[in-house]
Image (cartoon, rainbow, N blue to C red):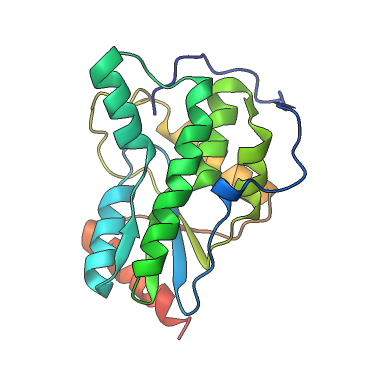
Length: 206
């Protein structure tokens, strides 16, 4: 994820003015009988591939990472990267994508990142997070949260900017999940091994 501001102190907790109610545009829709699986992790660790493979395996939908097409368009048109002002539009687009795909899902929905990931990156790059985004990120719930291992080669593109920080960023995700009491499991291995492992885990929900 490429952002225009340098990483600030990890101890910084500055936020925008707090909001008391979750913004309507950031509300997560609950769909009966649909299990939601969130896949989080550092860049270029196989999140999108895993979502696609799992959706194909279970004949269902997956919610794409809204940030990528949003930032790719911005890069293609202005040659500029993500800025603070982009965070809320990205958050709203991500929630809209997830809610839409949840309404179309067949028992499972696989989410290629969530607001929680956007929140972690916001703290990573800016040392703070928009309060509405953080409130929503912590309020959203998933039946299974997966954290991808850094065990696949890094692949460059217009948006990726941290090939040598993937382990450090992955540790930031792990710490944030622990801090906010979000149970998770690490997923690694080959494409086939990852799908088989997740399928076995989901069988426990039956």
